[in-house]
Structure formats: structure tokens, C-alpha cells
Length: 66
Image 1: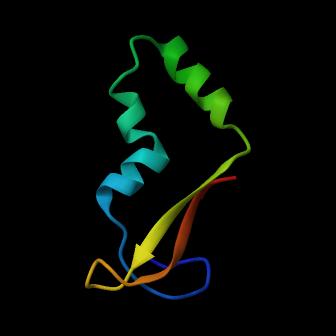
Image 2: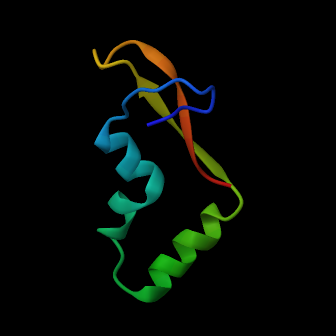
């Protein structure tokens, strides 16, 4: 994955799932729940940390949304 600063690295799936809505989707009981979630996040950005292969050294961030 390429961070906003152009550096290449890795992101944890758990961070990606939180930022992209995969975790939230598991809690939706109806399409209205999903629409409300989308409206609440509309226009916002959600940064995800990007790490070196050691999983510890932060090299940048990847942004979801906008």
C-alpha cells in the first residue's frame, strides 16, 4: 500500500476494516442502518497507519474517504 507521503508499507486489516466500514456493516440490522452510517461519515476522511514490514515502524498513513 502507498501512504500519502509516497512511501510503501503495510496496514493492519483490523485498521482497514474499521476505516472502510467492514466492521460497522456486521452490526447493521437494515438498509436504513447502512444509509445512516454512510451519511454520518460523508465528506470525512479516516487515516489508516502504514507500517514497515516489521509492523511497528510507522512510515505514513493511507486515507479512506473524502
